[in-house]
Amino acid sequence: MHELAPYAVTTANSRGRRHNDEPPSHRSEFQRDRDRIVHSTAFRRLEYKTQVFVNHEGDLFRTRLTHTLEVAQIARGIARALGLNEDLVEAISLAHDLGHTPFGHAGQDALNECMQGHGGFEHNLQSLRIVDLLEERYAAFDGLNLTFETREGIVKHCSLENARQLGELGERFMNRTQPTLEAQICNFADEIAYNNHDVDDGLRSGLISLEQLQDVNLFARYVSEVRTAYPGLGGRRLVHETIRRMINILVCDLVETTASNIDRHKPKDLAEARLGEPLVGFSEELRDAQREMKRFLHKNLYQHFQVLRMTSKAQRIVSELFSAFLSDPRLLPPQYQVDSDQSRRVADYIAGMTDRYAMKEHRRLFAVGEI
Figure 1 (cartoon, rainbow, N blue to C red):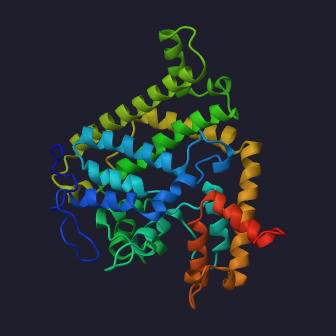
Figure 2: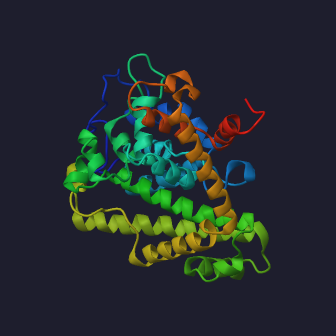
Figure 3: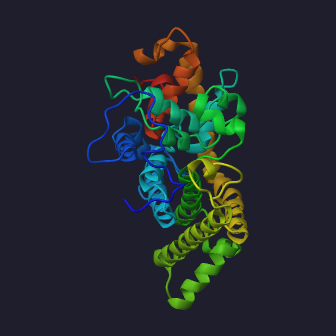
């Protein structure tokens, strides 16, 4: 590992694990976190969970797994440039979407609606629930027994009500302090990845066009640069050359702006880096450019009638599964039939489904002739 900055997370300043664990041999504590995440059942399921396009709609569109790997790659590069802990950044990145439902945000919204009156549903908290409780891999404890810093980085957003139930993990939400710089990097790497790769998938699907994207300043700037450098270039190469330039400028801007913020505040250690305003961020120009791209994608891709049709079907599948299982828990696998908090166990079961498994379960329950 490269030399770490004094405000980076290290094994020495880590708050450790919830359960005693023998120190790892030939790897760091955060490498161990990464390895446990990669070998988990929830991680494997990401291969068949929606990013924007439902898994069966095409083999070339991104899934939660490919998105997760892209986030980890971007985040590691940023961490290295800033002298921060690459292994922690990778672990957080690989775990950040473990709690996502089938069918992406449509599934989450539907499950959250079903869980109103039962504590709600939020995928960040579900990711934490998976690594703390639901994974069954070790004899000595439930979950994966990850370090505090990896677990804290997983919880990107949290209401004050939920924060009060998280103990030390919820302290920063109540005290209005910041997560580690490594966790902050993961949040921005996630944004960089999904904005740019949703552009790629949107163009591949034909739901958005190059002509429409000409109205988005960041895209227009770099597609023009590519066309000047490579006259006559078109098709997928034009798109990929443009997107890689957009990712590069966003990463470079984030590194330079964050380095400037750190230099201005001069945190002496990890504790000081958590105080005050967030230190990781874009310049005002690139922050505005990212917001413009988000608005474009929301209007032209996420709200496209073909996406909304699938969204509507996905929400109906999740809602009907929840209603059926809650009204008659005998329909659930035995390990999900409990005497208390049955609604949460139903949510656990549905959230753990892949897209195609959710559709299969729905057919089993509601289609005549299916078992």
